[in-house]
Length: 150
Image 1: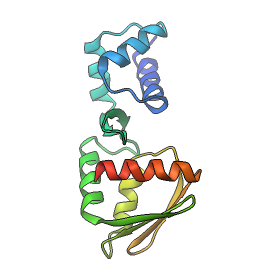
Image 2: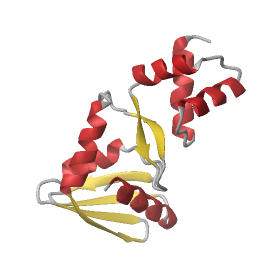
Image 3: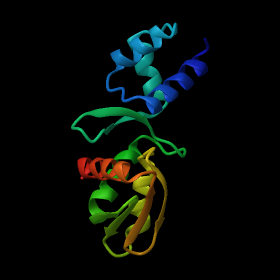
């Protein structure tokens, strides 16, 4: 297996599962027949700009920063979310997020960067974001994830 193939599999694994340690990731790779040391996995994590994000239950998991952004932007997105967020409420599977005036687009970008699988899409105005969530139950999950970051 090439380095690129291994790194692609790592991206797939962290998007499919909540993996929170390099040892866990190394073990999963080994169970799939992919030989990699913890040091190799550590280098892969750095090269892929993978960072840890909250899972909503007090734990963290690995996640790839997408869209060509550097890993340091993940911290900036969290700051934007914290600085611009005012409140949120749901109407069945629609999550409405209120923000400081003029901050909705920036907060929506921060929420989009979280790559929440439950979110179908979002629309931002000046101080309000509407997020379509797959189900009403998943809306509660997304709200919990946002609360964990805040």
